[in-house]
Every structure is written in C-alpha cells, then in structure tokens.
Image (tube, rainbow, N blue to C red; front, side, top):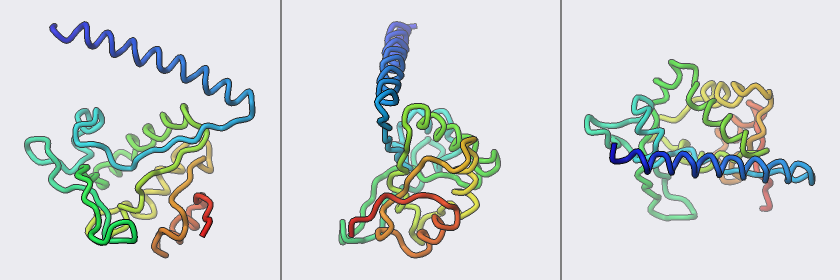
Amino acid sequence: SELAADLRFQRFVQYAFHRQWARLRAAAEARGIGLFGDLPIYLAGDAADVWTRPDLFELDEHGLPSRVAGVPPDYFSADGQLWGNPLYRWERAREEDYAWWIDRLRAQLRWFHLVRLDHFRATDHKTVRKPRAHCLGDICHGLERGHPPMVYPVKNLLRPQLRCLFIELALDFIANDA
C-alpha cells in the first residue's frame, strides 16, 4: 500500500518513544521522583480513539460530533467555552463496564506515577450528560491498584456536588492555595 512506509515509520517512532520513556521513568524512580501526567477527559474529534471506537462518542452518521464539550460561564470566561470535542456516550461505556476508560487510565499509569484528570469540570453542567457517581467510581476503582493515584481539579473550582462526590469516592484533589 502507498501508506505502508509511513505506517512502518510511525511504528518505529512509537517504539523508540516507549523505550526512551521507560528509561526516563526508571531513572526518575531511582532518584525518588514521580512523574505527573495529565489526562484530558475529552478527545479531539479526529483522535485515534474516536476513530476506532465511535460507539463510545456522540457522533452523527458522518462520524462528526453531534454534541460537543465546553464549560459554562465562570471566572475564566464570562461567556463560557465551546471546545468542540465529542461528548461521550456514558451509557454505552457502562454496558462494557467502562473497559475503554479503565484501559485508558491504565495506559497513563504505565507512563506516570500520578495522573490528573483534566477538564473534569466540563462534566459538571446541567447541559452535559455527565457521568454519575457510580460511573466515576467504577472507572477509577476498576484499576487494580485500589486507591487510584489520580488527582482532580482544585477543590474551590468545583461545585459542592462534585466536591462531595470526590470525598465520597475517596479521590484526591490538587492542593488548594486559595
């Protein structure tokens, strides 16, 4: 195929990256340093995961987002933000016990010692079909390590309902300076 050479090159690049990252992680561990990763909750519409698992996303018949992510007005933006990332079909993810989510988090935890779930606040709005408490708990606690080495947004940036959820699920917050 005309893309065969490009595919082989991309595989090599990924192989080299994984080898180098494994050495970096081992060197950090040897020095008592933990690596802190950032996992965005939403993916770009053209991301590989959206392309390979369209059933997990709110897409139309052409594979384009039918609903998109953003955040309501807040102190960052008086008008709110519209990011354009496809929303998740949480009901579909639940049917497979959130396996895709758990695999995604496990992959991050192979690279990092601690992972921050970025932009989780975007799920906290009345217009979003957000994951319920059981969903977030099942995903995080589906990891074999027990208490997940994950942190979430700063406490004072969350509505009280989300703060209670994180406390109920025994999940950590990023330190709050305010």
